[in-house]
Length: 213
Image 1 (spheres, rainbow, N blue to C red):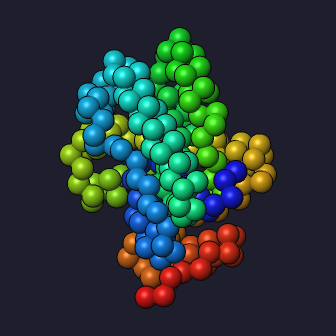
Image 2: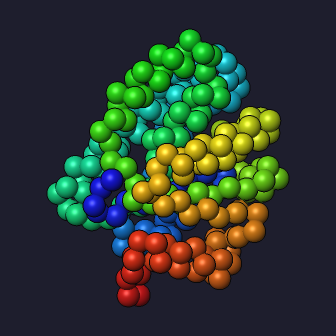
């Protein structure tokens, strides 16, 4: 685990990862690391035909996230500036496990293990989860054309996979705290008290202090 604070916000598509990471970055003066999504040239084809385009899509994400986190590792060594990210590379295995055929996943996982071995681990994970109706509503409201093709069954299974992964992660990484919040119950974008609740939990866990406004 890196000694410089590194918070990773995780959860399924549409749950609000980027919105929360952006607010925390502004409040605590942390560097904001955002994942590359729409730049993936295979993503539109992936949502049209998951089986045909899953390997290309997942490999693009893996290589780009590896490069981003490698850059962050160097950045933290040079600047000692804390980081909050709207993803961590472990999410790649969640998506790949669901979409890739077994023979492709075995190849993918070999590459993943090599690339991820020495990347910085977060000091804390914020896990956002929500029911299918909430996720679909938020995906529709943010209006990304490419996401309107998402199969609800795919999204539902993805949420279930995240829940199982986080449960296992807590058992295997007891040194990394995981803060879990329900997107069905909390609307930290539109309700100030909901965001304040999350921010207080972050402060209590990492000892982070908001900057003076």
